[in-house]
Structure formats: structure tokens, C-alpha cells
Length: 358
Ligand code: KG4
Ligand code: ZN
Image (cartoon, rainbow, N blue to C red; front, side):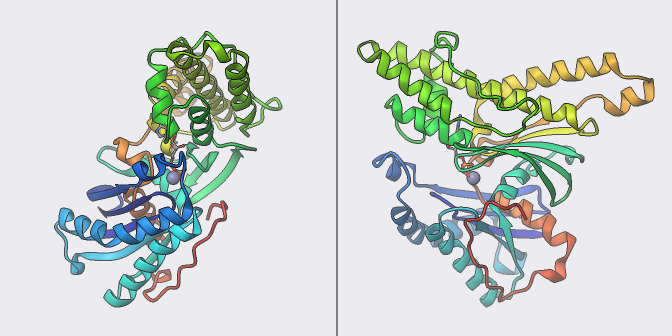
């Protein structure tokens, strides 16, 4: 079953065709990064106008790359929210019109759920439940327990800035441009992550919530305190120290959650910040240690076997980390499979800013 998906929640105009929720036939993304770099962030009105310009060319390129005509497409999937309403509307209206004219079912997908399904894209063994997911994006940051397809329990979330938002704001403080995540990661490669002692906010004991605003303020204070010393090495060391602080809190909380849910078989990383190599590296290290320790303390052979080897996954391609439509198609496929009759053509999809997972 081939699904055509559209994603326009923020500043990427994206369309994809995915077969059976996993095989990506085309994944086209028109990025607006250059446009928003001029203002150091996304101006919603500017983003919406750009979506209007790019929507049809992106769709045409996607269909041609997938080698499909409309008869091959069985259903459409569309990001309904959360996101910028003026951006979402371009996608939802386009999808609604295609669904109406071509008489295809239309599946609304929650954006964060879309990110979660980015780990289904590609070959290899299908993920096995229960799964513990760390979502780290510019607009959202959660720890989620996924018990089955589209069955989620939010265990923790950010109380202020999301991880990606913190990267973007700190990059701004250091004058590294937009988007901040890749700029900080690149700068950090030449820096000493131990030079600045920055705070790690773990909140109350056992809490699975996050808070990054204090860390951002600490970075700002270092810059103010050392105004005359801010050269390239200073920036690289501060970028590396900041990255270490974020990555340590994220990976540590993941392990705390894992200890609370011993039946979890896989750990997934999703969202724009999942592109961060240092984060992947630290999670892999901590998970290896977790798996080793569990093998030693397991009570009997059978239980040890059942408990062993929690698998770590992150999106197989960097294109699946940040916003894209392939992940929306994947999420849409598993939703459709669970109740095909629920999704009809001529559906009116109303965009939403709500972060509620559905
Ligand atoms: O998931 P996403 O594309 O958009 C939202 O749904 O919010 O995430 C974008 C975020 C931005 O904040 C960006 O700075 C961050 O992902 N990001 C990174 C990296 N690549 C993108 N953060 C850290 N390291 C990276 N390599
Ligand atoms: Zn996103």
C-alpha cells in the first residue's frame, strides 16, 4: 500500500511516498533555512508564503521520483499539528483537495507521532514493543512509552525549553546562526567540553521531565562575564560544554525511565536533535552499560534472556531526523491499518497547535 504524505508544520515543505509504512519511494524536502537564517528564526508569515510557492513543485517532484501516478496512491496522510497554524493550513488544504478530487482516504497525523515513526523507515527487523522513546525537537521534548502501534503514554516532557530550542537559543547567544543545533555540534568538535562547569538540571529525584532554560541562562552569564575573552576557542569550548550538559541530562533520564519499565525491548531517539552524533554516542554508551549490568543481576536464565539486549535505534537517514513527510506516511500507514473504514475522502482536517498526543 502506497501512501502520499504531506508535512508543512513549520519551515519545511515536504512530500513523500512510502510503501507499507517502511519503504521510502520518494522523500522530497524543500527547506526554508536560508530564508529564515536572515531573521535568525522562523517568521510564520514568511514560512506560510514559502509553503504556497513550494507545495505544488514539491508534490510534482515527489510523484515523479516515486514513479507513481495517482492510481498507485491508495491514501493520503497529512500533518494536522502541532505547528504553526498558517503553515499547517497550506498542507491540510492541499491534502483535503487531493483527497476530494482523487477520491482517496485522508489520514490526519500528529507531528510528534510522525517523528516517532521515523524509526520504522528503512529495511531491517521491525521495531518490537514496548518501546521507550526520547523525542528531541525544536518545539517538543518528551519521554514516551509506546506499548503498541499508536498506543502512547507520555512519561515526561519539558517544563520550559525543548532540547532543540535550547540549541537554537545558545547558538544565537554565541552568534553561530540558524538553525543552532548543527552549528553548535560543528563548533563543539573543536572545543573542550570540560572547560565550563554548566548546570545539569535533573529536577526532583526520579523525575522524567526536562528543563533547559537554566542552562541557557548559564551560557549567557559565561558570555557576559568574559565579554573580552570571547574568541573562536572560547565559543568552541562553550558550545562543547553546553552540548555535554544537554546530552548528559537527556541520556541519563532515558536510563532512569528504562529502569522503571524493565519490559522495554527497544530505545528510540527521534526528532531533529536525534541527528546529534554526541547524543547518539552517549546513549549507546549508557545503554551498553545498562545491558551489561542487567545481565549480571538477572535472577535466573529465563528472566535474564527476557531482559537482555535493549536495542537502540535512531533514524536510519539524517533526512528522517528533522521534519519530513516520510515519517508522516509511516505513522499514517499504521493508523490506517488499524481502522481503514475510519478514514474517508472529503474529510475536513482542522489544523491544531495542541501538543496532545493522539
Ligand atoms: O524535529 P525538528 O526538525 O522540528 C521540530 O519539530 O521542532 O527539529 C528541529 C531542531 C532544531 O532546534 C535544530 O537546531 C535541531 O533540531 N537540530 C540539532 C541537530 N540538527 C538539528 N540539534 C543538535 N544537533 C544536531 N546535529
Ligand atoms: Zn518536527
